[in-house]
Image 1 (spheres, rainbow, N blue to C red):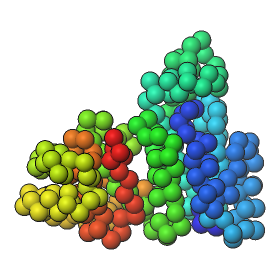
Image 2 (image 1 turned 180 degrees about the horizontal axis):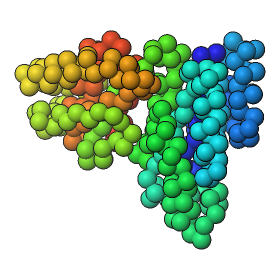
Image 3 (image 1 turned 60 degrees about the vertical axis):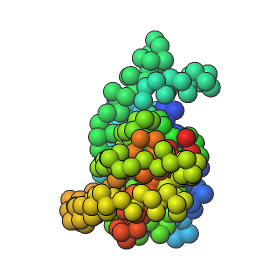
Length: 281
């Protein structure tokens, strides 16, 4: 067993989806175990089982007192296993309101209104979000895309790297991802959208990729970005960062950013995954 993961975050942000995705990857997933039992159960799991890729504790309904307890549990886990991490799932308030109104579930945080419940929970969880090793914003992605991100980040092959690096392509017209560390803008490149035969294609198709990468500014941009990341990535790793997310944006997120993101992955042999957020829009 490789690692221990504490999965928490805003109610409605996708904990059940992450739980199912991790199970599909061969993780031992435990949902809503009392926090006082987490350390003991993880110790037993780590000492007796080698068939699982990792053990994940899905922690929900965390108020302020549980926030302190969860951080204490992570500290205790790290003394037993240095791969103990916190994954925090987040989403904007308006998205969470829409999700709760759609399924008519009662929000677990007691407050007069749904908006107050979400605001109160966000305040209670702020310390955990700040302390999290990885934050995933699910507001602009659907359930299948969230499962894909989890699979790309936590596959067994990627888990072997000391710091997991993911590259995200996106469209500025759909908003900048809130859960990334570095953002690069490639909207200065000629847009394949305005070429009729390239418009229905994406940056994963050779004609679009060839068109984008054939531009001298694209090669200059790639050279600068890769050279910077070549020394930044080890620096981040030396500081103990477990996850690094690099975002590349163009206008719509279908052509230029996709081609550039794939090329950056190709040049950075240690890049673990690429997620194209807006390629299907």
